[in-house]
Length: 493
Image (cartoon, rainbow, N blue to C red; front, top):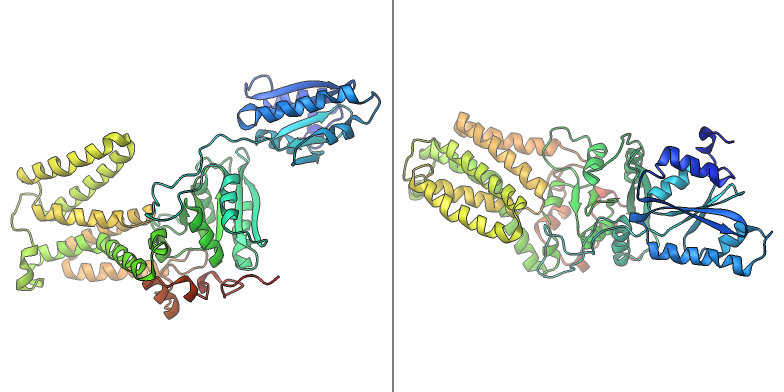
């Protein structure tokens, strides 16, 4: 009898040995969703293995019907293995002689068929993963544009991408990550556009991941892919929109798809990638530029408004006489900086509460918090009206940032600036803002300067950041991704 150690490498010719291995190592007979179906085809034992929750059981039933009918049309003594191979009515049938490989496929949702006396198994794709249909992402909604978005199924996500890019040079390389989870991760790129060095770096990093599993999917991959440490600023961009992912592929970026995750990783990215939104490209260039400038203003407001106003409160002499009204006209027993922090954390409490509150109740909760709590806090002297005003404006600026990760990072930077201003006043504001820009300028994500094209300065790239140009006028791909083909044109045959 073949030992378990030997069975680990090759499929034994006895189906009973395969069954024993499945019982000892995979949990056959214990796990209710691991199913075994035994058939007798031309006096030969044929065993089928599948995971019920990941397969299309109706199609498996149809396959069993086809196999059983062999007994009515073929004679005993024939080559059963070849006859069965001919009767497996499926577009994806693979033969393999590795037992571990077959088990991995079965646990991934495929059907394993072993035939007594044969040293190979059939692996049939009958997957039907549970999931939802494509719909517009809640965090990336547009007024005009596509309403489909990525879901938790990697096959469907790559299909949504291929629907938009029907180029024979589009590639999806599959890699399995996690010794226990064995999660499917795909690297997407256009072969004659993307930088080969970047592809090799990402492929090498994914293949070197040594962990049990990645239950947090793409976020775990990001932490292995990029050594971010305690840096709060996002070094890769996430998107749940298929059109956004396709647009970045055409620019020369590399996309990382992870099964079980409705978002994909775009690499490399800069700070300005995180403040772009699909809405800008669904409008005419003048309207898109206006929307972009308003968003830039919101981002700057979310970072610098509160520290700057706090500086004017601490040093009123900095304000011209005509602008002296912007300071607090009333005083309370609570220092202004403490009021600002309480208000800032209060908005964060409301945001978290809205996420964890059922949708029909979240709107009512927001109105109660905004009207009652804010007004009562002013009436009892906890806040001055100006604090509520400026905290609210800064909070709105935070919500205008398309990237949630960047908005939280900007909020942390704002709080640090407020602390420095409170301690050092004007020198603190100047030095703090300078250090903030130096910190961003020194950051690199996959060898990409974080503030490109502002630092290092590239005029053409910077103009495309400031102005939403018409697509016919955008003839060059961004140089920051080092594309093999700089010009946007159909590939030569």
